[in-house]
Image (tube, one colour):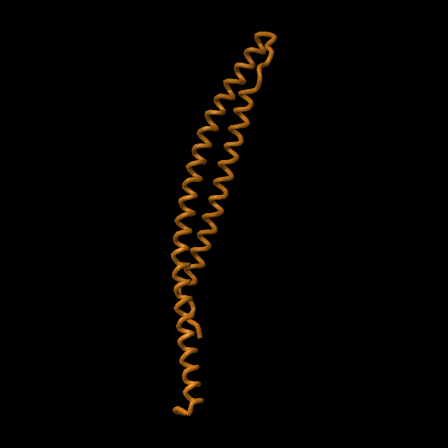
Length: 139
């Protein structure tokens, strides 16, 4: 009977950790995309075409709106950079989790090869014994 892989529990844990790291990475990338999209939308608002100014109040309101949009862009730049750092950290965590799982997967594959070779040796021994009996060898 084949020997079970003794580290299967640890391998399952590593796969679960890898799945969690992948989910965290996907979430971080989504948050980064959202921040980038909001920044682009704010930038488009700031870059809108010229507006015909009819009086001083409108000019004052336009200047205030542009100043507010510039301030929002500065804040969005900071948010985007923080989320980019979070996404980079999540990528590193995923890479580490994948590396840990991959090492165990290689051990599992090596174990499977050894078990298969052992099974083949056992089968060959049985076949050799049967062949020896059929030739009139020892009973």
